[in-house]
Image 1 (cartoon, rainbow, N blue to C red):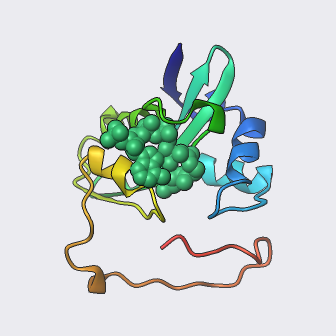
Image 2: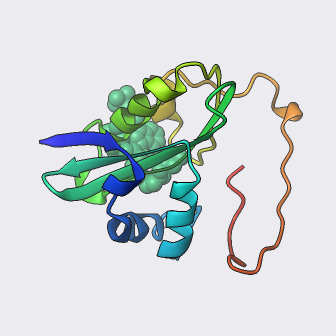
Length: 145
Ligand SMILES: CC(C)(COP(=O)(O)OP(=O)(O)OC[C@H]1O[C@@H](n2cnc3c(N)ncnc32)[C@H](O)[C@@H]1OP(=O)(O)O)[C@@H](O)C(=O)NCCC(=O)NCCS
């Protein structure tokens, strides 16, 4: 039985780091960086089977007008059971983000998942810009947008 909950203190960051270190956007990420990102996020959510964390996602937001969903990851053993979609819907339905009307995310190939949650391709992609800055502690990071 899978259950989803939120809160920094409820996450198993050893397991979350294991998962995100395999993701194409954060290969080899370390636990310090994962925890710093989580503690500065508006919402972190996890999927659990009994006590084992098997999914993770977070929202970066001002909790007013804008939110960005990132680090959506489901343990390979539990994929294609609707858990990824449940994590995203949990964030979208969360009381603390109920005023947010602009949601953004980036994905290489999981468009189908997010389309099921109401996301659409950008109407005006030319309005978005990106900057990649070299930082000391994460020299090999790829841009997610
Ligand atoms: C992408 C990921 C989170 C999906 O999790 P999941 O629990 O297997 O997804 P779900 O079972 O909730 O899938 C829900 C829907 O999304 C679709 N979907 C899932 N992964 C997809 C993908 N990579 N491409 C296209 N559609 C996808 C499913 O087909 C399903 O659609 P349906 O209900 O119409 O059949 C998971 O495969 C994963 O962790 N992948 C590695 C990390 C990653 O790529 N994360 C996404 C970053 S944007």
